[in-house]
Amino acid sequence: MRDRTSIMRCLWLIVGALAVLAVPALPTEVRNNKNRGRGSMWWGIAKAGEPNNLLPMSPASLQMGQSVYGTLRRKQRRLARENPGVLMAVARGANMAISECQHQFRNRRWNCSTKTNYLRGKNLFGKIVDRGCRETAFIYAITSAAVTHSIARACSEGSVQSCSCDYTHQARGPSGVRDWEWGGCSDNIGYGFRFSREFVDTGEKGRNLREKMNLHNNEAGRTQVSSEMRQECKCHGMSGSCTVKTCWMRLPTFRQVGDSLKDRFDGASRVMVSNSDRARVNNAITSNSASNSVHAKREGLSRKHRYNFQLKPYNPEHKPPGVKDLVYLEPSPPFCEKNPKLGILGTHGRQCNDTSIGVDGCDLMCCGRGYRTQEIVVVERCNCTFHWCCEVKCQLCHTKKTIHTCL
Image 1: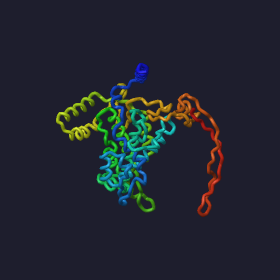
Image 2: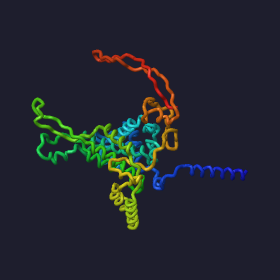
Image 3: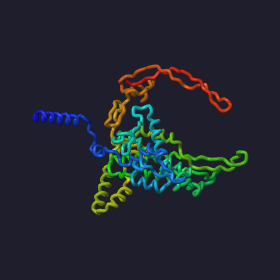
Image 4: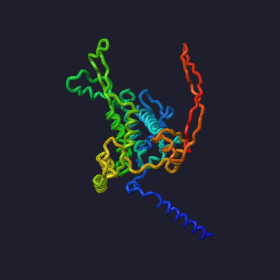
């Protein structure tokens, strides 16, 4: 019996070794930095930030419920305490990010699904963020952009006590002679940008390649919001003569931000850390270790080198990524088959478009497995009319629709 057990153990070791050899090798830096950055747990505030978990203390401040409190790091909790009203804006931004991500990827194999059974300490977007792929890059960019957008808008709405409208444009005034002047209430993109850096980037020190990827994509999301600020104006004068025109800066709609980041996703750059940057960070760590100063290591290194790095393109013939470009470290999984280890749901049972040759087409969506076609009857409200007062009456219309479902 003992010999049989030993033989079985050896067989399992051989099978395990063969399985390891069968896995495609990733670059050493990617393997060593495979785990996601430390700052992603806050995404759970989108699920926890519901009315039952946000306890009102005063008209302008909120107290964190226990489920919300557990999703935040110590610095993020402090920022929420010091800026009453900001917690609700962050929760609103997280939900905006989820909705926009699911809209942008609704017709792709990976459709930005979130975990319905979200628990504290688990990742809201699932295990896909453990991979440094394009999809993870988009998640970091869209969540960072959403917080920036939500905070900037909350400031101008007066929902956050520590900020207000952006009046810096009025202080500078229009340059030259113009037929308009600054006024109104500009959305406070400056405060939103800075707060997003402090809150979203918490835990991302930039000490390894994966954290650099996260920081770059976070910054790309914020920069996209900032670059799409637009000027809006309102006319004043008798009978709409527009003798005086007041202008202010307004945030873009978040759909515009999502569309732009989706374009960046399609053209994302695969990167690796540059040799000069690696040497600079290693020298800083060595210097800090020699001085035996924990504070210097944490504060000096993170502040000086947190955003001061240049990622090198994986393909030397490509140009380095710009500040608004999304970056990734490794190819995306195919998303065709269910993979619980990676949190991939697969495309079995997904609807597809049999006339499309794009990513939503049945050939690509179903990964060549084929698809099932069936006709269904959909009951919809139609021919609605308003009756005085005050009722809307509709008919029920039966419509036949043809749907295609992946096998």
